[in-house]
Image 1 (tube, rainbow, N blue to C red):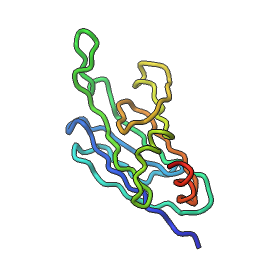
Image 2 (tube, rainbow, N blue to C red):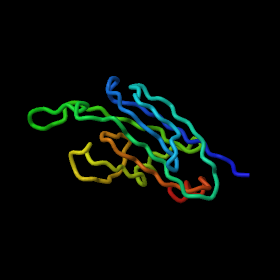
Image 3 (spheres, rainbow, N blue to C red):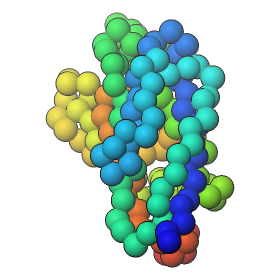
Image 4 (cartoon, helix red, strand yellow):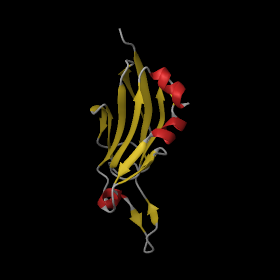
Length: 146
């Protein structure tokens, strides 16, 4: 019988009225969805079967528009609305360094630029997807990447 691991994180917004949305998916299945992410961080928890498989955890930012970003006459961003994902952990083991190293953030600058893929440092500012691929058993994967 396979055991499971607990995945936890905090999801918040830099703007309390922005109405940014998020979906968190595991292997393409939505495990958490929110159409208006709160300014205060909200805890998210779900389980993953600790079998011998490859998995993908995805965070998808939705509903961001040009109105969420204020730009001055010189093109400098003076205020913005972003989603913050913090304290991502597998069985209470925080993945900060691993996420920075392995997660990819794919977006197209909300339609104003080419599709790009970059590292993820905890904040999503464009509609797009942060993807973290991992394998189970989780403790073997953690040992390989810590």
